[in-house]
Amino acid sequence: MCSGLLVFPTANSEDSPDLFLPKVYEPGTVDVRGWLMSEKLDGVRAYWDGQQLLSRGGQVIHAPAWFLKGFPKFELDGELWTKRQDFENIVSIVRQQEPDSRWRKITYQVFEAPNQPGGLLERLTVLEAYLRKYDLPQVRLIPQVSVETPAQVQETLDRLVEKGAEGLILRQASQPYVTGRTQTALKVKTYWDDECQVVGYTPGKGRFDGLVGSLVCDWQGQRIKLGSGLSVAERKNPPTLKTWVTFKYYGLTQNGKPRFPVFLRVRIDQDLQ
Image 1 (cartoon, helix red, strand yellow):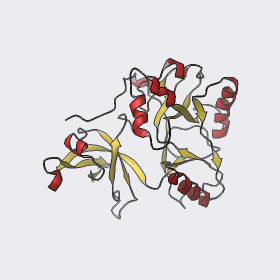
Image 2: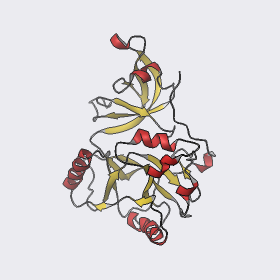
Image 3: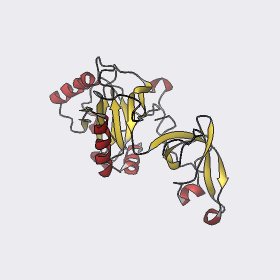
Image 4: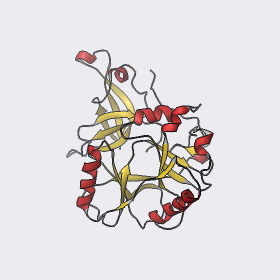
């Protein structure tokens, strides 16, 4: 069966960037006053290592030479993005090994300057100074807003989601650059999302007779089923075994399983986001 996987040309494993990964924000569990808040853009995450753009798994992203001209020699982390609710189009542009004119619609929205000294704003100031010196309209800093109250987070989330945004990212302002899944970076959404690995299938019934009814996935050592969200095409040609997929859910049940899990997409590469 064809998985429909998005595969980038493979880079050497030692080139895979070591990135920070946000945890889920749960109101009331962390005092986020004084943290920095920014919109979570639903694009393709891209790491600039000073020479080339890499996906999270270290695969080369073939951006046009004109797009990368003038990029700094220091590292950057951000999203290749066009506009809200345009993820599939962004992927179709970025995945091309021979980049086309649609890259004119792409901007590189930067939220981190890894391995620079100081807190987040100090690190981003390095890029800000660089952009004042060099004209790079395709490279933009994602605005960071200081959080004064927890209510401000919810109000901002509601306002942006109404406009089609995916959610928010909260960052501890004074924290030096760290990598891995960290409590100093939190994602805020109207729903939660995560990744799981396909380990099997259940048969479809009724109008889905003869097709896949749901994906059976391994999530943190538990078996969950993803049926909602699958298109007819995906039921005919489901993701292959061991494929990582992204799903959304609405909190946890008393048994600690995702409540109302819904399939979103095959992960754009085979590394956790």
